[in-house]
Image 1 (cartoon, helix red, strand yellow):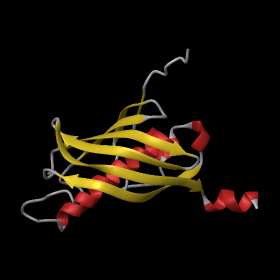
Image 2 (tube, one colour):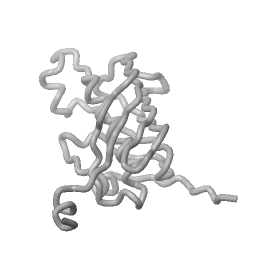
Image 3 (cartoon, one colour):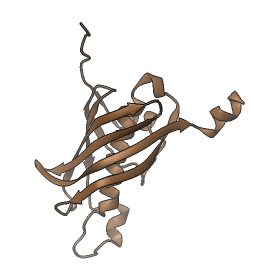
Image 4 (cartoon, one colour):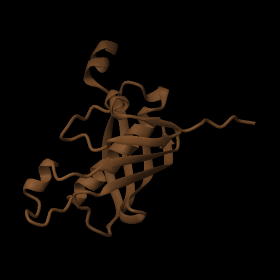
Length: 158
């Protein structure tokens, strides 16, 4: 019988050690839980200090839908890159399917990001992604991604 792993949580330093993204393009603030194989629950705190609010509906700021999807893609990268077999690889977001935006996300909201891996073959995968605020879905979709060797490591191996 396989022993189940206890979920782990990650702070911002742990996230920055995994992801190549940096502010203002780092869109995940905390990982509440992940098992490093099949799912991640993460948080993005949406504040008025976000640079996109300067030009995205001034006077009635709304988080752009593409950035909600990018937050979900980064959360997916975290669950994959948390797995030791993908250490040092770079995640690339490939496709978004069945995407729906249900409600606007505004400053002061806490975006809950849930990723469930649907399939993972070699270095390509697919996941179900759901973003919610206060328990209500604000966006969802299926994301496909690839993890590849970074240029420096590739040059060293050649």
